[in-house]
Length: 87
Image (cartoon, rainbow, N blue to C red; front, side):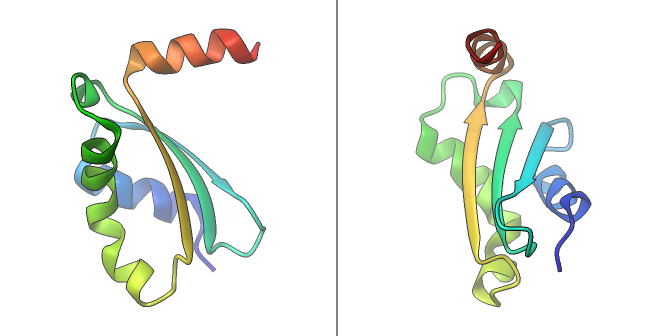
C-alpha cells in the first residue's frame, strides 16, 4: 500500500520545493487526491502543470500501484485564495 510520504517523494522528484497535500481517497493507498503548490506553475495552463507532476508517476500508474491520481496544481497565490474561501 502506498503511503502519503511516497506520493510526496514522487512529486518532489519533479518539483523539489513544492508544497504537497496528499489525501488517500479510499484508504487503500491506490486512489489519491493531491494538491501541489509551486510558484513555477505561474503562467502555465492546467494541462502543462499536471504533465510536470505526472511524469514521475507514470511507471506506478502503468503497474497499477497508483490506480487513480486526482491532481490540483496551484500557484501559492491561488492556494492562498482557495484557503480563504474554504475557511
